Image (cartoon, rainbow, N blue to C red; front, side, top):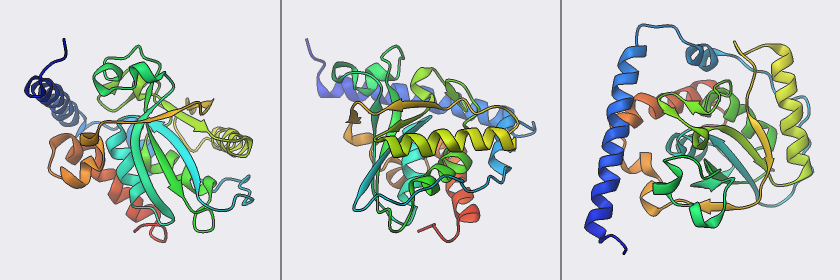
Length: 233
């Protein structure tokens, strides 16, 4: 029997409260400790050597790297990007719901679908932001306080050109050793992207003071502004 709306809202709020509590504790414990995440955030990574510009018209990229709130906010502030949607990729339609994905075991990853104009920003440039600002590509099945395969680092390529650019860039970054550990980002063909529930969309714009956002996501926007001033909007 389906739960009434009031019960669903209560469960959702309890889940978000628990996540926030974990974020606060984790954030406080990391304030005085140097970490691999800090090393990644300060890394200066090179441009991709393979970055063709054959695509024309609006294009789509699907990227996963931890909680989709922060990923969405980062790419919404990138010039040439017209739309970003939070959602799920990797599993099937039956399990593409936050209350299932958040417990793990669905094969889904929290992901974002990015619509962009390749005449203004290339796929390679999006990946440079993805690797250097949007998340930590050296963490396996986790990002910050969030752990599980649903928070994995993954690129869901929509065509062979994207696959080649992503694979080449990962190899380039690993070879250059700009990160303190190997990149663990998965490369998977995109099967389907499922938008998340409405309350997840534009979450940071609507909840800028939410503790998890303040600790883990707003710093990413500042990194984007500092590292990519010509692409920041």
